[in-house]
Image (tube, rainbow, N blue to C red):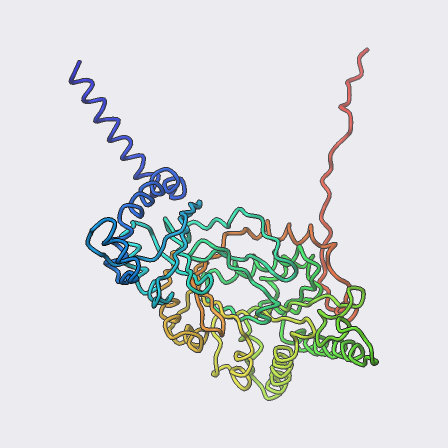
Length: 458
């Protein structure tokens, strides 16, 4: 009987270990909530002081504190670590705030992030500056980019703000057109660039925003969203006709803003504006987001006549990038490669694109074109993206910050259905009416007779 009990105990222990190992690989979120979180909290509480001392994040105590310790406890005076706040567990990790000791700065803690990760047994540690003297440590318990799940907390960021991907620190990557008007998205074939565009477009479809597209691949990328698009150009000829209309719309909006600036003495300050966001709601035109897929197709030419048309289109794109923000016109430029070799005006256009998102690329030069002028280490992070992880990208902006993100999977049928359901939100822009794509009517299924027929009996 004793042997059977021993075997049962060993079998139960082995089953628990095996189940935990399986959950850690297949269901990391569940493993973290049940096993990883308690273990990491215990490690942090037990080794906080020693870990901070080993990382060089402790300082000598103040003179009054040293005298008090000597007088009361007569213990050896030890260096003091940063004061720790409450530990706040999350579904993906931990959050903890530290009050820095005199003489410390957030860069000191960020330099020891890798050491803290190994000491506390978590996947990654990120440092955020909260206010002077206080930093927040965000401990991530597992690789959140392996299987993307957007935060459950309902996001209501306002107009032109769309949570489009997940950052490596388990926070949402929000595309904010008011803060970053124009963006360049690069990526090789099957890198996830189209998935990023799909999530962004469907997020904007639920807002009263004018969506226009230029897709020189005969419209195969943007045509499924035709129900929500106000304009769609599927080749260079149509793009050459659409861009002047957008420039004219931009000029008309500037005229509207200028008419508001002709204020008389005593006009309230809230009526003085330099962009459309200062106009009254009844006068403000709807913002326009222009999606350009495979921008290189607009630069390629074969004859001198096409070269003239290319120069005109590039000039109009540069004007939209330079002047469009105040008029509420924003650009989302996508392509596999973008650089000076495309031709005249390419570098000038890229300089106007503040936001940068680089998926997996075929060469290092492409990553440097997207991120080289932002941060020297960002192109190397983009080149390290594996082909087995489509949707993984490096996002940055001209402020110098960058991070890894990954877009959640969204099927084309679901995205198209979302655009059809949001078709009633499409603002009316008379100038874009000739470019409105044709949307075939959805066939109605025959539901059959209301009542079942009964056979005639004699």
